[in-house]
Length: 310
Image 1 (cartoon, rainbow, N blue to C red):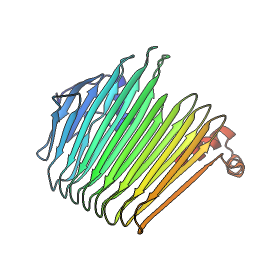
Image 2: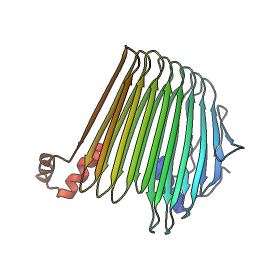
Image 3: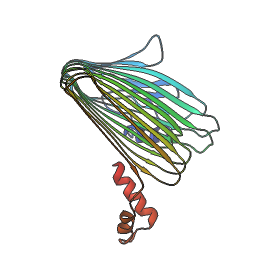
Image 4: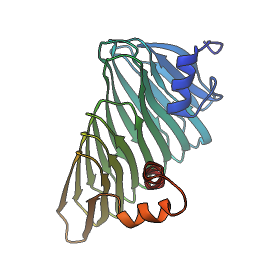
């Protein structure tokens, strides 16, 4: 399987969602059009196909350091609906990076859809950086739909960073993330989304700060253009002495619509919870300043958006 050959469309999707231009080194599992096409394991990272449903189990041994796992999903068959269940077991004191993501090229008139349900189990003092990108393209009239669900369970002293990016070309997405944190656990989530046309993007975060001195920082930045719609829902439940912060910052353009719904619940006297939300258009003085440097209005807008989502 390691000698798999990818076509031009697959390679482009792989580059967009995983920043790869060839089959990667280290541990990986590449799924294309509903089937696993390439896999590699290492001495510290094992990948096992589930027997009861589509998907894989990834086992990272305790103490594993500076290793990575790539698990991209590529779809180039119009009308395909793909569902996977992937479970990640991060051993005690491990420190690893996992790069996921889905790229769809839909060249037909049918709807293509990928739904991924990922569960993460971090043992004591484990550290994880998780990168997830979604990208759609195509020269047909078919829609690209992606619905990622992420479930996180963090034990004492564990740490996780999650970077979630929707690049472009996704017509509809319903993104759900739920997390439970134990004592001294830390979770940082950074989300970036751009929608245009008639695209719809919904995001729902729910974090339970169960352990003493646990903390979470959930940050979302988005740009809505055309007549697209976005909805951001954030729930943080402080169930112990803990710290929680939620932030939604959106640029609204054209005739788009953005809704931000914060919800904070303190169930402990020493729970410290904060939410910030800002929705607004690009400031006129920002455009004018860049246009005086010789940029057109469209170029100035693009520069501001790129900087905002960087």
